[in-house]
Image 1 (tube, rainbow, N blue to C red):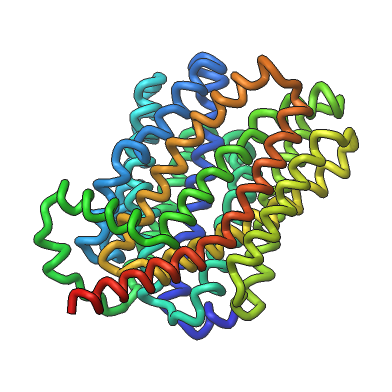
Image 2: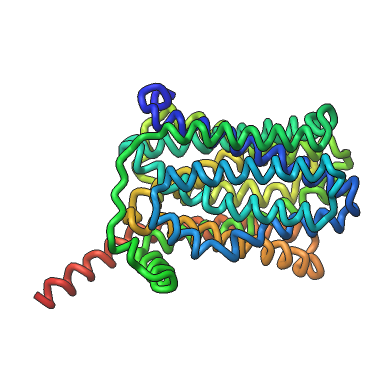
Length: 411
């Protein structure tokens, strides 16, 4: 926590991110509630959520290069302001009684499009304003802030809609984004952007970014393993409502508690890691925690106790939170500053593409396996995949030795 007090730039970025994440969470609840209650129920919700994922998949490669070419602070401020004014404009349309599924979907699309710039800029700005030895604590604090903002936003979103109405809630969200931009304006740091990046053509820059990420063993290995683990781990979001109703025999309140437990675990993990020194043997602990994650995942397939399930989900949140923090630290540290925007955009794009495929794959497997069998199988796969983290440092060292040998031979 002392990092917030001794680093003004970090504190301003922390506050700006906290407010924008809170605004995004509240708006998400407002949008889903509006779609479900006023615009056509489940079908409208599906349409709106599809517009939420599209911008990241479509724009990620271009966003990464755009971020690499420009000052990160300016992108953050501009993104927050655009988000804020888009929501205020949406509130004006609500005041005029102009609301339909397409206006809501376009608003979501624009906000997510702008948010993709914000996410990449944020990740690449951290190592520019924080010392290398503070990267782990910085990412831990941001992780806990994001989890806290999401939990609070999801918790009060419905309350705000109930008391302020949809228009009032949207105005509140828009003001949060604008206040976030004001905080970010005062971030002061030096950033040099080389001609090698600014003068590069768009498709050449994207191609070079992919080549760079694929060549670097640590970057490629982390992104692929994280994506593979998410592919199987996200199945729980599809199956949890069914488990709640058919196995545990509880209602929406119980489901809400279970849904929040993983986020609470990640929040606690972020707070804990912000107080401890940086973990040294990162890949070893990622492998160990990944195996434990797989075991707890499989256990969900054989238990029928609400409280045991809640504890397992909390533990999973702790473990997932650790992995997310450590992977961000390694990527920030190992990626050349001229490529960071593209690397983090590729990471986001890869995960966004895999999610809908993973959801469809679960639906397909349920034709052949029971829910219990599927969960146990997925848990075993997650545990096995986690062991591959141990290979990354050795493969990376071997690649560096071969590269040095090749360079020496040419000389």
